[in-house]
Length: 411
Image (tube, rainbow, N blue to C red; front, side, top):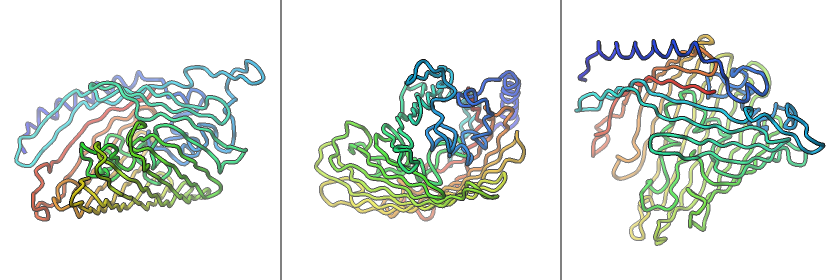
């Protein structure tokens, strides 16, 4: 590993000193904190990770749990018209990587400084009673895109068991572990963000990972300890020519009271069909996952397992190749104090893929965060690649360790 440690330490110290000084001037909070006059920690442990109250708030269409207050905290214009302040819908999220170090096997270490990753324009809330909207528009150096965009209709027929969402949403939103709102926000979970159907090949019209936003319609509900969801998706895009569609569903049981309130156990599954752009071949695939989440005081632990099969992994008309993958993830988060949060993540993915190179993954991710204000995180995250080279006939040329400094803020 070829590094000038003194220079890196000096640069890193300067970057963190500047961020610390700037953090003392940041006073604004996100739109829901403004609307309900509450701190960010009412819904988050260390944002964006939700606590149990935050999960209930989201599930109820961004209305207080157990209520239908979507018309409250708004100005009554008439008997059937209620208008909210615009600032109660709009927020801004910012992500910067002041320092990133990558140490790849057999290569010189790479040091990157001052990466402005993205700015998100975040529009969400209850439009009126039992109707919600959620839009995330991301501005980054490659351009602008909107991944998450859905409209929700909640407590249909006055029952929490009937809620509908339409738009671009994640099939895994109600699972105990999901692709969004993570403990370590700058690190994605390998099994659900990078393992795609049909090998993720370019000729696939609709290859998808497990948890990304897809155009879908979903029915979900909750009562007592039970949350359920069922949905149907068109595939990767709304204009996808795939006539078969994908289905998904979740069953989740949670503790609703006591010292471990918010702890849960869930089962999730998805089944679908991919086609190639020429529609000469198709791949029948399915995925399933089981997960548990323990919440106790300031401790947050998640363990999840994944299993999936593709009957035509390379999406070819002749000689289809079956593939099976197995994966796991474990996460531990702990609030040492209001301004200090630590997390540890372990990802492992194994596959029966003949090449043994496209899916194999094995990394440990420690992370520590300083939270000077409830709407700001400054952290160091490491990634230790522990994938052995001997069990892969092609080796692991991309094996590397990483150290990343991250600054995140929501306004």
